Length: 363
Image (cartoon, rainbow, N blue to C red; front, side):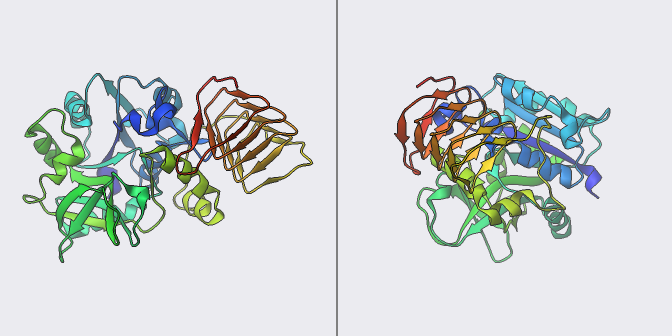
């Protein structure tokens, strides 16, 4: 059943969403929980569902993405037939790039397509979604999550409304948090031939794939499949910060990363374990390999090659790779981009407006 599905991952989210963090990288490759990248999530849940033919659509400035995906075997996608293909171009929308690469999609014998973005962080049970789609005989299935209480964590996301038959009746942007909102994960299951027909009849080149599908709700049977586990959207610095802090929680960490049937894969790097030479406190943190910890680290996420010297204190922080936090430095609620050296300084941000130290900065 699953062999007939092709995956399409769209990476066209605005880089303005995460400000300076995406000045040198797309949202697809922002670090999550230390060693992972945002694109690892859709790649993994597609792999776990048996999908072996995946196309990634991205803008022309995608060096960090190509570097991350250069070893496709990490996701079992280093194949002679199918596998992982990256399409990039100087276009304004995923729709334009899809049209430019229709020939590659036509080469596949797969009848069905799963479309997913990179900025929705979740571990989707795609097997169940596919089973639902096929049993319901829907033209399109869209995956959503119900948020029972008002939450600002999904401002700007799409809200979906369904009738009593679970047919999509309305899709709009979320500008006012309310109870029982259905947040779209922007994951769609659709026939390849139907997708191509919709794309070729689009009113504007710049319109996105998701908007083409939403606009067809009155002419198609679009049904909803509910995702009931963890969801986060990387559409602001505050949400990026919160997502990483969420994953420090052992329950959330286990739900996302330690599901035996749905593991999350990432690029494999051979590395040595982290050295802990501290007499100070190191607790409740995610610390990647090849770090050197002598100082205090509390409620924080550290990527590879981070050095926290004795007398330094890092609390509620996200430290990206190859950073040095020197003695006498105290950080709280800070995001530190890669290749930064901080020496004898005290910096404190706000979880709702975290302070970001730019890449290669020396303070």
